[in-house]
Image 1 (cartoon, helix red, strand yellow):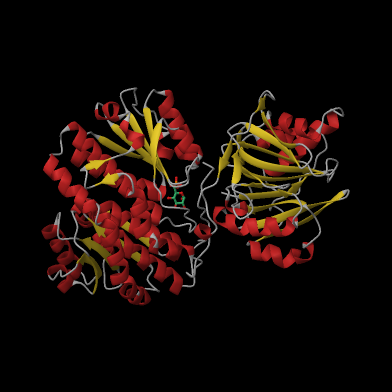
Image 2 (cartoon, rainbow, N blue to C red; image 1 turned 45 degrees about the vertical axis):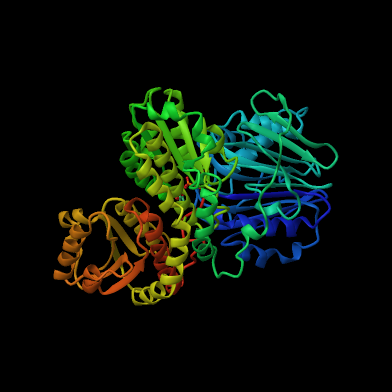
Length: 616
Ligand code: G6P
């Protein structure tokens, strides 16, 4: 949800900012802008479109400055347009600001500033903030730049990460965060600012992640001065060593990040299991959960909160935890949970699942559950993300950076963690016999290998099937039991990146509505592993074929019954039903990927979406 880059140092600021924006483009990509500090003015270029469009209009900025900042936008207030793009300048042209988030009370502030004579060129909330800073400086001549930023921020509600430059304070960058992330890279005689560390990972391994409600004034002369926005109390920076490598955030020969990430799954699942699943010792070792096993096992209920793909993982988590640990589980969209009045007490456990660890609705839902006394367990991919930090305990999915907007490897890593948690709880509370526990963990250990096999075995066939359905307008995805949420996720993948309307349903529910849609033009992806409810699925396939629907069956290797009725068959290795969504999801990701590619869609940056949704 908008990417911010800032720089001060000895390098060409334009190059650092543009390269950084390219790395952050996953956060939003409907407009982009750059501003460079010049003696007594700013060079500004901004445009609707991608970073490439920005480069096309600003090539001659190369080599002009050592201080600058840039922005890649995901529109909230005002359509994507040149005027609404960031940076925004104050009316006197002296202050430039880039912003990620939403200023909720921008309308009242805009009225106030308009009454004072300010004018606005854009529809954005951001332009209000930059003029509010000018207003403080105009009306308080004694006020310096950082104080004016702080004063303005104390007047706004909402969420923000901002970087601000002032013409009269050359070489000074003021940054602040509330709700949206911001990292400061500490180089040797240079400083970087970015929404995540990826823009500066090749220049420094040391970073400070700005905390909620903090701001920093950064200059080569005075270093990094961090303060509390509310009361200006000085804060000692916590310097962290970055584990991120350049290789992890590059495409590595793949055409798209999404394809690379699909193919990384054997490794990402293995990394998620590493050190936790110790089959020889017959144990699951999870540092995050160990101290809290009793509390979790005695929970009245577990509520899983998440959004998007993470919510689908949560649904599978419900099946896993209820089956193996016999603790009641509810799964809620974080956005619904936070705005109703859910029954949550201190006897409850809330598991928050989030790849980015920044999703605004999930954050807000956690805060609400915390206030009601629940114990919050986080499952996040991004280390040290906001959600990882506000939860009471948690486990990281070690999937590595996920850059494609459509989540793939983070999803299967989330399923892996949820399986570990369910088995660990079940073993601990005695609902799972030692024998059954051993059988399941031995099986879980084979999943990375099975995912490797499914990638090799289905890559070509899914590509061929994808070609046949490039012009489809609708898709149905059906599954039962553990594979019902996998069907939801398969449908979500397809609609996110190909813009084909797709719906997921429990297979049996088909006859209560979706069956009306079935004719010879309707492709239906049906996930039908041998375990679980195979016979029932066979009947569902018959019902579909009786109405001439086109069946793409995702079945176990060697299947004949469903395969014989299907128009297209994708085979995956057999595994226990509870782990089958991990393996079966892989060909569904490939199918969505290739359909989107053949339709000419921008797979890594689908229209209107963003990877990290830091606004409500
Ligand atoms: C966005 C992304 C999805 C993701 C969802 C939740 O919509 O495009 O891929 O599943 O946010 O994100 P989170 O980071 O909380 O898992």
